Length: 79
Image (tube, rainbow, N blue to C red; front, side, top):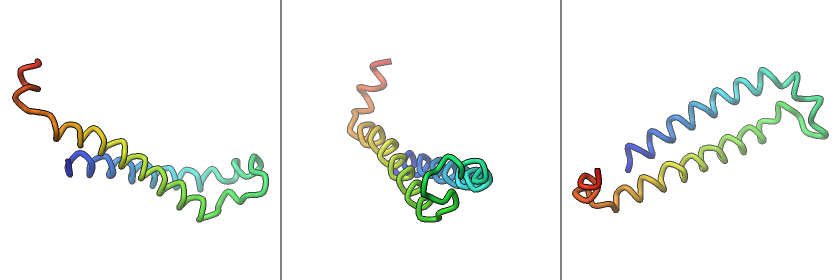
C-alpha cells in the first residue's frame, strides 16, 4: 500500500510543481479573466496545490486499500 500511495503522491507533487510554474508563467494572460483576485496570489497556489495532493492521496489509497483486502490466491485463479 505504501508503494502505490507513495507513487501516486509523487506523480501528484510533480504535477502540482509543473502546474505552479506554468500558472506563474501564464499569469499575464490569466489576470484579465479574474475579477478581484491576483493571478500571483500565493495563498491560492498553496490551497489548490494542497487540495490536488489530497485528492491524489484518496484516489491512490482507495484502490490500494481494496487490493490489500483481496485474497491473492483467488485473484490469481480468476485469470
